[in-house]
Length: 429
Ligand code: PA5
Image (cartoon, rainbow, N blue to C red):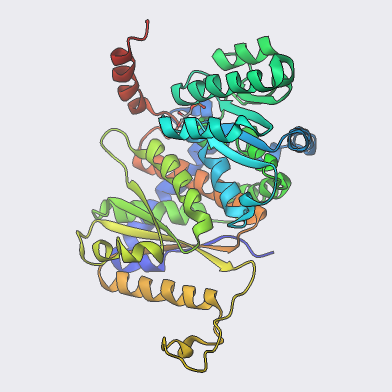
C-alpha cells in the first residue's frame, strides 16, 4: 500500500549537507530519548506507542457507544477546546463531503471551543426543537469554555427530556479519577471514556477524545488507528525516516532565520488539520523564547490574499505543503463552443490536474522568491492515511522539540491569560 512520504528537496538550497547531517544525528538522539523516556515531560509519552496498543475491543466499544447515541438523536454536540476539540474536528472535516452535514443525520456540531455569546444562543435555538445528545470532552474537567457550554446545554437537554433521559444522552470523556467533570459524570451516571493519564491534550486524537466524535460522525475509526499503527511501527523501528526528515529540515531552516512555518493545503477539507497542527506545534515548541511560529494557509484561496506577502515579504517564512495525490472523484472542465471566457485551453482537464499545476507553479515561484519548501505527500484523504499523518506529526513534533531543547508536553504559558481572566471575574481562590 502507498504511504505518507516527505520531500525536503525544496529546502536543500537553503541549508548545507553538513548542517543536515549534524541535525540528523540530533534527531536520532531525540527519537532515542523519546523511546527511552529520557525527556522532560516523560510522564506524557503515552501517545508514542498508543496506536499499536488500541485493541479491537476498545474500538468496538467506541463504535458501539457512538452508534447507540446516533440512533437516538438527530444532533450530537461535541463540547471541548484545544486538544479536546481540534483533532476530532480535523478528521471529521477531512473525511466528510463538503455538504454531508446538511443531509445526513445525526449532525455533529462543536461547542465550547470559544466564548462567543451569539454562537451559543443560536445553538440553543437550533437545538430547541431537535432531539440531541452531548459528548463532553475535557481531560482536566475544569476548562472554562467547555464547562460553561456543558452547563448551558445540559440545562437545555434536561428541560427538554427530563434528567433521567438526559443522562442517557450524555457521554463524558475525561480523566479516569480526577476533576470536576469526572465527579459530575459519576454523580449523574453518564457513560464515560477515560483519557489516559500519560497522554496530554494535544497528543490525544487517537484516544477516545478523537475517536468517539469521529465515530459519532459515522466514520470507521479502525482505519485511522490502523494507519497510525503502521507508521508508528515503521518509524520506531527506523524503517521510515519521514518524521526525522521533517524535524531535521524545519530545524535547519529555523537556524537560518526562517522562524515561521506556513503549513499549506490545496484542499479545503484539510483546513482544520492545519488548525490541529498549529496547536500541536505551537504549544509544544513555543517556550523559553524559542520555537517556529506555526501559521496556516488554504491555497489557492489564500494565494489571493497572503500570496503577495509570501512571495515578497520578509524572508523569514518557509512553507510545508500537504499534497494529496489522489482525489475522491473527478470533475472535468467542459468544452464551450463559444469560448467567451477563453477557458477552452483547460477543456478536458481534470480540476485536480489544474490544482496540482497551481501547486507546482506556486512552489517554483516561492522557491525563486526565497521561500524554502517542504512537502508531505499523502496518497489520499482516507482514514488510514489521515491516521498516518496524525501520528507522523506527533512523532516529528516530539523529535523537533528534542532538537530545540524544550519540553514538548507542557504549556505553562497558557496559564497567564487564565490567571488574569479569573482575577477580573472574581473567581474564589
Ligand atoms: O494540549 C493541551 O493539553 C491543551 O491544549 C488542552 O487540550 C486544552 O487546554 C483543553 O484542556 P482540557 O481537555 O483539560 O479541557
